[in-house]
Length: 169
Image (cartoon, rainbow, N blue to C red):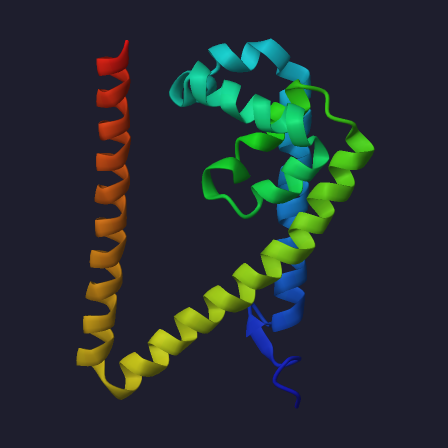
């Protein structure tokens, strides 16, 4: 049997699980849009809106106003924007037909890369763990340390920028 058609998860072939994930992501993006469209200005007072802050939402609005549906496609590649820009696009009433095209293209390009890439990383690490548990543990520790370092650097950079902003004002 071809590896691509062999049952992978819950007895489903690998390709079908990927297709279901793409459709689920596309569905989520439609929900985000319509929630944003329905709530409009009320989004600012929502729990998510308050947590993000008006300034951050204003930046996202600027991106959507400047790039329109193209911003929707681009948001797939930017982690924070991926789940905030679609509802802002709805609130700003981005053309829905263009939104559908942009979100479909984003789902069709980003999701398979994530699905295949993440699967390759997980299965590769499991293969490494089966051959050398010590090496796999070391790789996991290095990955967590690298992620922690990245987070610390970003927070320090933001804090420096905020401190400089205070000095300027």
